[in-house]
Length: 393
Image (cartoon, rainbow, N blue to C red; front, side, top):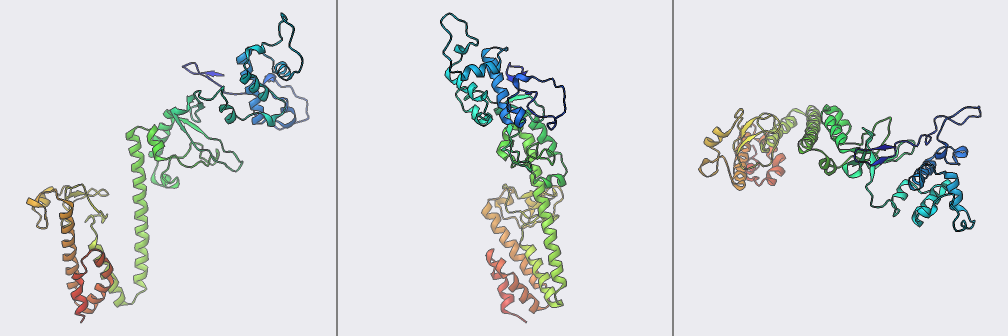
């Protein structure tokens, strides 16, 4: 038994609750706390039911005194003999037990291990229900109220174990801090999730990851922000890998085409790129912004203009204020979203027209215009390609 700083008793070990070696017929000498050993251990070995017997002995001694014999108590609980005559001292002070306590002790100290309640069932009895639930942290082994940490959902492994594992708030915070320092390769292997500390090949917990809400409830906001940022970085890495894969597929398709088809496909790709609102430096696509049209790329930190997509180095504010494409009232750097959307449509019309006009072969321009027409229709600028389709050379 351990006692915490606030006086809460913690059961640390039942001493003989786990068998150290297989049974043997050899004569040995063993020093154990025999009073806590269930009778069935000699027949079937140690089990969770024998653990509950040991807890029954502990409960009996807490209620009746440290010298209480479980054998005598079990005999008294199950005895059908009449009570001692008035004035005679009883062997055990059973009158100190109420009916609930007597019933629990009878179940826990009974000879049938299958009749003993589990720990979970015991917690639902009136004697324990509503009391603070104490858990031993799997990292520091300290006894902590269940509400001062996180417990995984439990999960079976190859040996059929499925216990839930508890981590106190202090240890869980340190655990998450160690995870956010992992390289992205390690983050990718665990899916950027926070798993139970026992989720290892040796310990074998297969519980699902903790939810973002659970992690946020325990960790400081700054640490939780680093955890979220790590997930963002992993998502961006996956996007880069996917883009590289798609690019390789495009190159392979182009190499398999004849010269004319390859030229049409290449020009169509350039038109599609021009339709994107993207960073001019790293080509990261964006859809909207916070109102200021002097943008900073979230990926490469380039400063660029939201109107003409010009790369402005580190800061685009001076350029935006004088940009010829700026449609905001007074050339302000802040713009209503609908005005910026109008400016985007104008930029796309201008760039698509320039690309198609730059194709000397009018039949190539015709085929390119047809190929990108679905995207132009979606953006309500299909009219810019109409002239190239209607005037095929």
